Amino acid sequence: MNFLIPNITDIIDILLVAFLLYRLVLLLRRTGGFQILLGLAAVLLLYFVVSMLDLKLMKSFLNAIREYWPLAFIIIFQQEIRGLFARLAHNHDFKSLFKDTKKSVYANLLNAVAIMSFRKVGALIVIENSRKLDEYIESGEIIDANITVKLLLTIFNSKTILHDGAVIIRNNRIYACKVVLPLSEKVEFKQKLGTRHLAALGISEESDAFCVIVSEETGKISTAYNGEIILGISQDELAQRIKDGTS
Image (cartoon, rainbow, N blue to C red):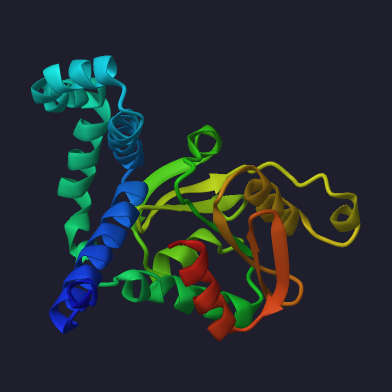
């Protein structure tokens, strides 16, 4: 039974494969190619079930067309595959397979939030996850720019025409601003929260987006995620919540 006990090289091998698979799943989710992974998993699951149940006719059929699976897969998911590679070429997302860039990507965002909190500048920043927010982005202005402190401070400056509404972060870029979001209808919050907080809570109820809010009255930082709002958090808490809410 000693052959069942893994040695150190087996453990390293397993951990490396698990890490690469994990990063690949995150990559596909971020670039909109997650449907491809689900389609492949469905095909493999079907073949596994057929083999386990020993469905001879179905197994013979699958074996007969097995050599055509890659072609059929490409035909079925051609749009997703084309979009995936286009995003990879544009954003160089293969880098994320080997290193965690989240800290550097959102460093400017965290710095901008800290400055706005100190100056009591109202802000609403929405980080898009797997659920795309295209129907809301249509209400705003698309800018598709790098995340910089100066740009965020300019957008939320009350003297600009862009400060009303939300900023949408997509693929680690400021994709849109002045976006109108749905307000939460929760009775317990409607009386005590302002429009920005209700909008953040509202979009978090309808999607998996992660929201950062800076209060114009108090400068306090809050977050909304999965239909829950956390009021008055510190800079360190914000950094950790962004990491947890955008993985």
